[in-house]
Length: 463
Image (cartoon, rainbow, N blue to C red; front, side):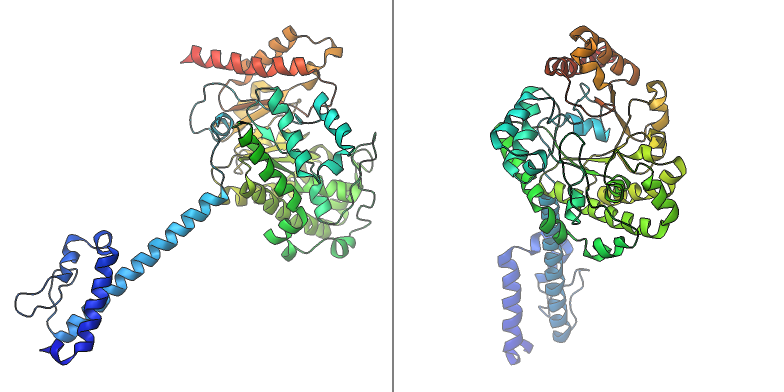
């Protein structure tokens, strides 16, 4: 009787229920009891609720019907939002490569079959093909960084030559200084220079963007060519069937500050300590900006295709221990916390060159891997970090220079010693400092092969 006198509500109910049935939504959203909500009570022929109780009146029937419909629509909306969030996350993090050995070793979630290896400055000066590329293009190192084709070529050169377990973006730590409108030059023979460093603490406010200006859009605007290079590298790797991790990287806050206020790594060596002592407020302001831009820049590298991240506090030796802990370490902690919250499955590696006494503290800050320079005693390195993170390093690149009297046999001996002293698991074999350009490509090849072969045999022996 009710529906005869209220045909509008009858049509509405049938239309809405029909839409739900046609969409097939009820099947996944309702429990068996709730599904009975569309059955009729024996006498009133009214809707039954999720609790199995039939409506007691026509008005209650209508309300119950609308309640069921709205509940289903809300569930469908929530499901769609969850799917969209999941989809967005998948886009922001690259799929792992087929050879994920170094990722697995870094994260330490499972044993590996052999120790992975890559080399600081593996692209560049020690390779004859690098010099051929420079001659072909007629470009300087800094000029090459503005051309994604050159960046991709130089990134891939060592991977084509050696069976390395990771490629690293061909770039420089001072690209961030350039993004902040600080001029960087490389006149030759004297390293990279900042010809017009910050003249005093007042210039932090006048020459450096504010914290609020450092956004993902800022990174895209100022550093877009680097991100395009990352994408092109991934494209070229796929074309050449090279399926290993690509490592993105950045200089750390104090290291960048050191160059931006001192101008060089060869003069004004005490200026960093002077600023921290005499201008602590302006120093902290600059470090805060650098911390944020580094975080956003490294995030952008991941979203452009990098599988792993390396942070370089290359000028750690220019700080006293107290200054390192008071100023540099909090910045590193903020970067680690933010990046690992965004990308928990992207390994994050840290190298505080000349300040590896900080490795114990760094191992508690969220980094997956801490790096040993050449001064670290291997016999205590494991105990220093415990099972909190992995280790990286610390082979002496001087062992790879033939003019030093080094041979394939001496390289094999010293490479095996690295594995014996540090163990093959939760280790990334690398150097204690970067390749300088005089290394023999033949000896580098022996080192890489020995690490792989010897670590694999040690792991099999212990199985």
